[in-house]
Amino acid sequence: MYEHIARYYDLSHDHLVEDIPFLLKLAAETTGPVLEIGCGSGRLLVPLARAGYAVTGVDSSPEMLAQAEIRLAAQSSEVRARVQLVAGDVKSLRLPPGEFYGLIVFGYNTFMHLDEAAAGAVLKRLRPALGDGGRLVIDVANPILLSSAADDPDFVLEDVLEDRLHGKTIRQYTAYEAIPGEQAVDVTWIYETTGDALDDDEGALKTRLRYHYLYPHQYDLLLTLTGFRLASLSGDYDGSPFHEESDRLILLAAA
Image (cartoon, rainbow, N blue to C red; front, top):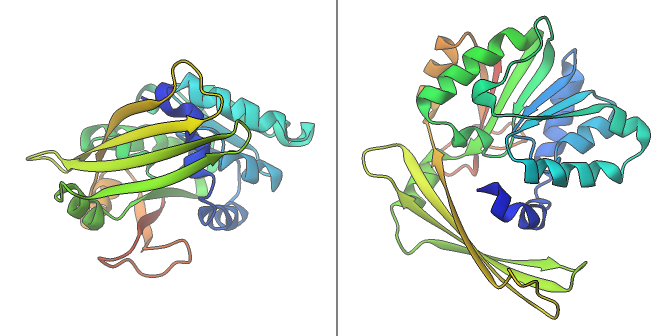
């Protein structure tokens, strides 16, 4: 679905910066390059590379990787040289044998694209690539709040996005719908564009994706079964303890 919304992605996500210092600190505490799964438009890749880290970004969407290329083009040659972009699905990703990473990152909500079976298979695939002393980070929405929003058919988020470069205003509506019998939520995004110079295919766009969520004890078991050890669990990037009202669920695991 990201081929439909790639042009809106940065407008709706570039305000997310709280996780960047958190990841920079983790990268400084580990040895070896960084691997980001679902790197999207490079929101996290670029600050990591600018801080001096070698980063490999994997994404299955050509449109999102094209946005990452645009973001990288604005950086110095030294920064660009530290970044490798890989087009591919993490479920079938084959990393070079003997290549190890100090930090493997599933950034903002990326892990929720995987159902439980796929999540287990992916973690088993990635486990040999985590070097000694390396860390795995999974950053997802609080499953308690997510399931609560999905159970409320009237819960809709509205955001106003300003595309100043093109003189457009985009209203983004987000709605959640629970999937009966599953720990899953269908998320619908609607983008309504207004402005002086609209393209022929602009005006309103609707797209949907499915998020799968696990609760902390389920993550703990999943990590154990795939060769990881849960090192910490927090509710924000400052390391505060997770509780029912936390915005995030951030898991840090070791080999």
